[in-house]
Length: 414
Image (cartoon, one colour):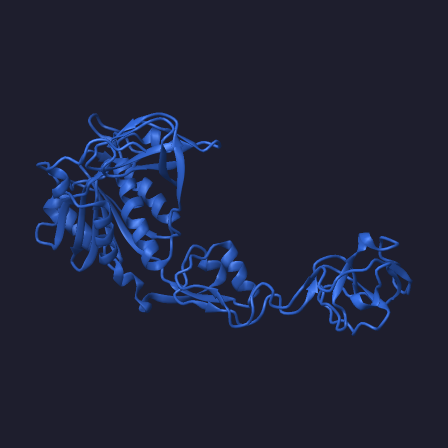
């Protein structure tokens, strides 16, 4: 990685760092992690949610020693090095409770079936002679080779023992975690209640998709883009349509539609232009409008509207999605454990790039099977087509101005 000249004086010192703004967003949303927001839901409804408390195993997995193979359960002491002919006892299918193993005998056993008392190993059927199970009622003998104790036996508690921690608090529950809870006998689990967000797009120039598009207008992509990102992250989204650039109308819309939500998110109207409706609507509210040292997504709003946490994202589509990925999503991950955090990967650039040294730049790219990442589109925050063709966000930290092809970068999978 090539870092050239130092960060210039000026705007970088007035801008808040990415880490600083993430900390501010996390602090704003900290009440969402209160235990009063916990609820008990059936396991299928807990997918993508996070545990409130750590969970201890109420039983061992497996709960009893069982066979790892179809074969014969034996006592290893009954078989000398040269093998032995053993008579056959009644078979043990999965789910049955077997009788104890008699000396000098072998028990046909199926995968997952309980190991009989007195048996300490399983000989796979393909190693037996004959290498197939005999007809019911046949007592053999069957010739089996010597085997060590414990061979193909899943010991009780070999996965997890009673009382061990099964899952930590704030674990995001995916299919594997829900499967573990089900295996431990749980039909319901205590999780954090899903966060409800009021999402409002602003701008007289914005038109709902599907309607006629007058000259000078654009279709609203931000609402659909952010709603999809939020729903994918497990957030419940309440849409309030598109607000005009009238501050009083925006205030009324927020008060009408914002009842009983956990967070208000707006897009647009947070920069320093003459007609920034969100800034104007928040004039009497404890809301800060500031610049984060990030490209795209520098202009941000944060505070409270009538006692409800508020975040104001920029109006350009890529900027608002990057804002969600850099601030709201990781804040929810840290506080609630869900959604699962983006795991950083390392990749090598397929081409050079330049970045403003005073800002953390977030580019879009395609991570290829060979570990190279190809940038999609340029730095501009309106390039929806480039975003749609990307599968990673590419991070260039503050202080780095030039990277060459082959340099390593951090990427987040989308």
